[in-house]
Length: 218
Image (cartoon, rainbow, N blue to C red):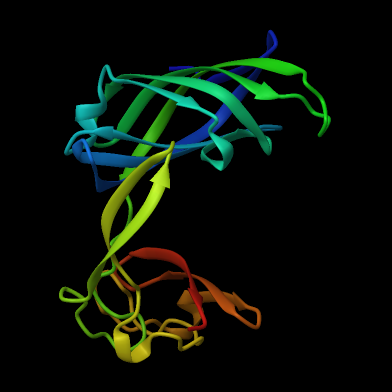
């Protein structure tokens, strides 16, 4: 499928797109929260949403209307006033969807609106869940905690696992072990950068697990 983005009739290709998802509950029951990012040579599209379901295929044929999206849906940093998301066929590896919406004008105080349409084919992946502490290698099975957020005006709750155990939380040092398998990293397998309050990292272990993330000071 050819992915494209059309703004007021002008069309640009989208070169890549990805949908990350995780299970989350709302007042409506079990569901899927998703984060979609699509990029082209000059464009960046981002949206987050929630729909009932257990696995990605449950999104097939579903529709979601996002109004007053705020940071939940944006194109090149401009927020959507309204956005209709229509899912086509969705599998555990790929999702096909179409978008129709209206974004704010370029000028900050402008009342102008621009019409947006897109067809997007996304790679689908579940959000990585850490299994082992990336500092000491302790198993994290018993260290999940509840996290509440708002998506599209809807309150959702999910279970989250931090990449470090309680004993290592707040330690702003580069990862030592793979959070997927617990294997120690060689120095050349760790890329990182830090400031006073956070550390960003990208690591690839000997088994090929690639992990990226950010640690923050307690």
